[in-house]
Amino acid sequence: MADSALLMRWDRVVPGREQQGLNLFGQALEYYGSLQSAGSIESFEPMLLDPTGTKVNGLILIRGSADQLDALRREERFIDIVMQAQYLCADFAVTHGYLEGELQARMGKWAQIISQ
Image 1: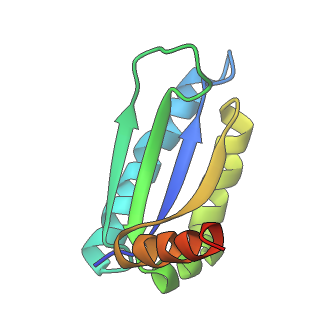
Image 2: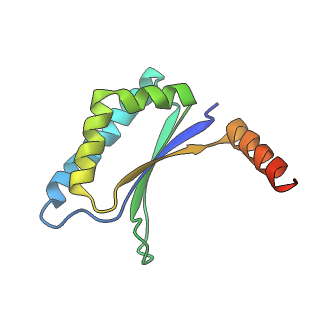
């Protein structure tokens, strides 16, 4: 069961780079699909959001163990995708998150801290 996640999010594609952005999105989904098939990640979920006035218009949530996601962040292809996305998309970011048991453990620590 996945206890960690990577959240890749972006605002909009930089004007003039739309086709490159669309191509990269397709390549990234293909890559994450191959990682899931190989068991290198547990799953991934792309999402496009309705306009809300925030700087998040799309995201990809990648689920896996902490070890799987640590290894992913060091893979050349992942690094290439991230660097291309930084060039093509405004406000692109990759953030590590916690799920399931790791989420519960961290919330338990938070509860201890605030009860002091």
